[in-house]
Length: 144
Ligand SMILES: [Cu+2]
Image 1 (cartoon, rainbow, N blue to C red):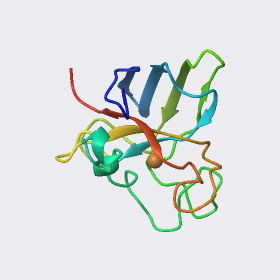
Image 2 (cartoon, rainbow, N blue to C red):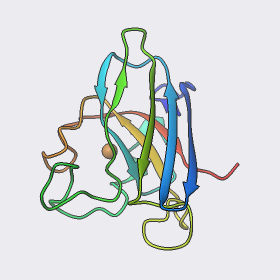
Image 3 (tube, protein in one colour):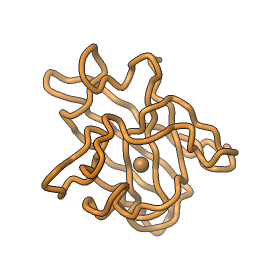
Image 4 (cartoon, helix red, strand yellow):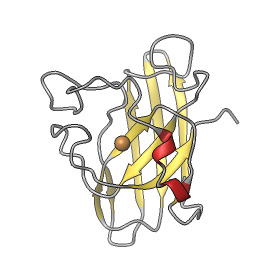
């Protein structure tokens, strides 16, 4: 995971299980509090472009963003990351709405995918990104 200055702030590891993807993320140097966390649809982390080239959420559906949205959620929606006073954020998150294998919402499809950490909390309801604000960190999802 890289911040907007290109600095390496940590790692996210994803594992495909029998019914979904388990992610462990640990990052540092973020502002304390909740940060929106999503899977975005293109494997491109360009800090000088504000990580905009990562494009929108995986499986974007207009009006359907948010884990608490009756029309949602979008496949790329996952819970917020909590960052402590020490600037460290760590979480284990499971979702069955994306995968690392062939099929719908495959994070390893031809244009790849990214994990984006946003500036503010995702309220899981406001369109289009839960009021989460700018993109502060980005990680391309790759096979190691
Ligand atoms: Cu996002």
